[in-house]
Amino acid sequence: MPHATWQDFETLESYIAKEQSLHPQSQGIFSNLLRRIGLASKVIMSKSQKAGLLGVLGTHGSINVQGETQQKLDVLANEVLKDTFRWMNSVSCLASEEEDDVMHLPERTEGDHRYIVMFDPLDGSSNIDANVSVGTIFSIHRCKSLQGPPPMSDFLQKGTEQVAAGYILYGPSTIFVYTTGHGVHGFTLDPVIGEYVLSHEDMHIPDVCKCFSANDSNYPTWDAGTQRFADHVRYSREGRYAKTTSRYIGSMVGDLHRNLLYGGVFLYPAEAATGQGKLRLLYEAAPLAMIYEQAGGAASTGRQRILDIQPDELHQRVPLIIGTKAEVELYERMVAQ
Ligand code: AHM
Ligand code: MG
Image (cartoon, rainbow, N blue to C red):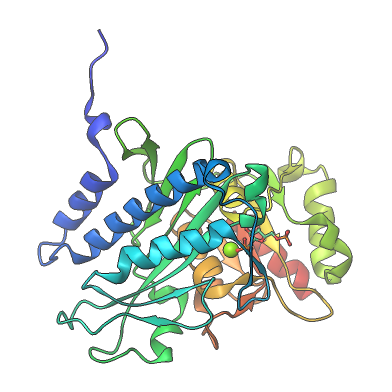
């Protein structure tokens, strides 16, 4: 007769507690923060699953600071995350793709434990009406200033200074993937018990190029090096590329989760004419770069490691090439030619 095994009880909660016990000086403040993100993601998941019934499909009628049309669910997910952190002593301020400016929370007493949380509440939300997977991305930094409202420089930290990063993918199942700099771990939501259960411990990207992911209709706007790279990976049919296939959802969390499991490369390069990428550094590229590096992959603009970029502004956009090390390095060589 089947019975429960220890794996059934290795939840996000217990895993975080175990990681925390490795640091005896820890007061559990940071662990609590990760747990709250887990809770927020369950609320977002539950609202998205009922979106067609709750009347929250479609556009909100507003434009965000990026000049993009906000979906009702973008706004709703943003509110859920803001409400999640509003009362937490350990969080000093927030930044979101859906907010023009940073959000300072009321001054707290615990001056030593002040974190900044930045997030993209619902990445890939243009897909939501078609019932395609979307995700939440988060990045956590320490506030450098110990008192008062943190200055902008506290938000503009390099990706190397993130204390944790992760994403939640709302797909056929809901998966929570995070790193605190000690490997990448994935948890699948068991909808019956309402808990995230460990399903992907110590994730490593396979060293194969199974998937090539990019918006191909942008090909004419890419520079010659990027076009050479795309042609080589997709069409050469040699060596590592003998079995490469094109896969692009248009929800980066979904594309990157798949590539993390199968191996491959995702690119959203700059337009040659403007030199501008689309994806945002602080709450899209940097957290996903931390995840990929921790899983043995790499992330670059083509000219610079994503995690080494010194941000200039909150909603800064960057070109992003992220995937297996071999492909990211090949891209860097080809654009340098
Ligand atoms: P969003 O944060 O407004 O949803 O935009 C980010 C999304 C990514 O998930 C996805 O990879 C990309 O934009 C798709 O853009 P495009 O439609 O130009 O290919
Ligand atoms: Mg996004």
